[in-house]
Image (tube, rainbow, N blue to C red; front, side, top):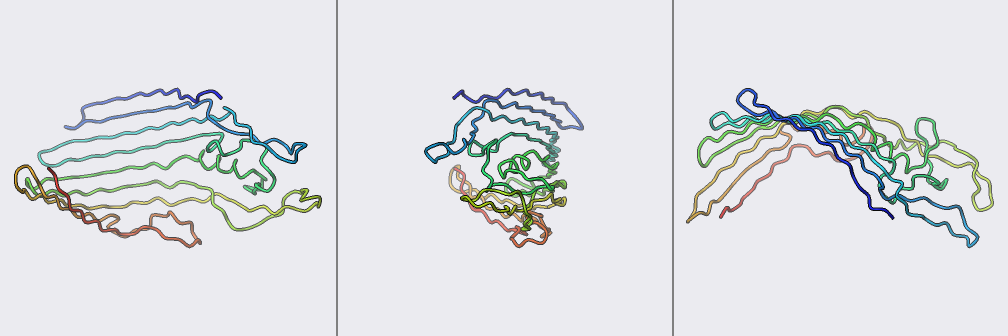
Length: 248
């Protein structure tokens, strides 16, 4: 087996802007010789065998744009990211061909190996994510922060629970019609969430400082759309975090 490797190209730019610093970064990775496996047909001994190889590969493209500035005791930060990943195997446990018929599913009217479906999932574009944060220090002891986080709409592949008939297969000497689970595309809605935080520092003996804090995540208790429409599940709503620490 060869050693997997990655060729990476990075371009970065920093520019003074409006009293702060703007940063732009573009990263592209070309990963080759990644571990993968194939599955043989049934041999004379009645067994199938997995053969490890270096046929795996993937590509990554990421773009980030940010701006930070300090005005007196106020820090303002704006940061956005977008990325895209393409791969021909999710990990070395995912066969890239010769998948057994029992692992086949139906996607967009086509009969596909389940492992290939995972590859399609990873190839979907990632949503645009933008964070805007403001932090202000009122005194040596008291500071507060506010953050807005936007995640754009994006598509994902979901299991519908429906079944359709597939091809005729040999099931232990009996020819039967296979049943395929149906998967389809689903759009996840965009989200805009707000977080608030406050910290208070209490000087103790010597250099020791007692640090107390409170943070409210998802202040407006909005949906985060991690559960598909019509499915049951739990989404994190408003969360309250209390912290107590000691700096020394």
